[in-house]
Image (cartoon, rainbow, N blue to C red; front, side, top):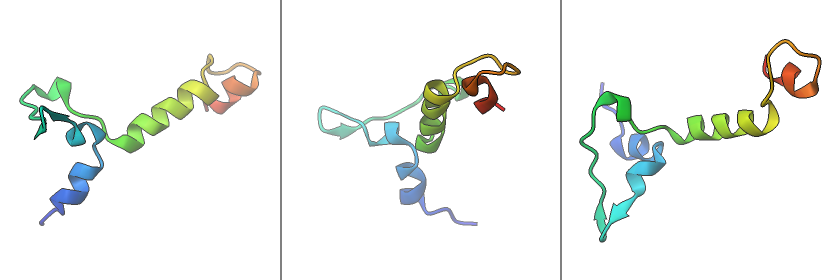
Length: 65
């Protein structure tokens, strides 16, 4: 199986960053793995639209489920 690396890289916004005009190189451990853009967007949406305790009757609580 061959992955289209340009599409894979495009899914991770941090991989587009550059330092002094050179692509940034990440040599950290798995705990520092870059986050896909769609995950960042989903987290942001959740934090804005559904930031409440689960199980409550509030609209934001209902949205957490």
